[in-house]
Image (tube, rainbow, N blue to C red; front, top):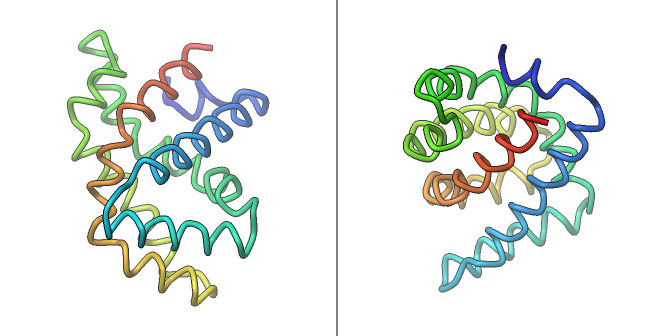
Length: 145
């Protein structure tokens, strides 16, 4: 059974989206240095345009993200621990997720969003890789709910 089927309940999806939004807030807040300032500024700009944009984006990306992560998750199920498998394969997990956001941002008509994402895209993989353990734990909690 794929992640979409395991996380098909709307209440579970709402909790998963809220947990992911909180994870993103925490990941952004934890960034330091000049690149961290840039990330925080871009994130703040996106949230300033629409405070619900992050949650909405997660909700819109969720079905595709779960489908994209299914092969890695399923491999982990076969090894007995899908959460640890995602973490151990964080680079691959990040690539799967970023391929989705790349495609979505490319199609948006919000120039400010495209510009902010474009400036941060090169560093994005590292940020996403750092967030994979938290994401894996969130998925593990909600997929087993």
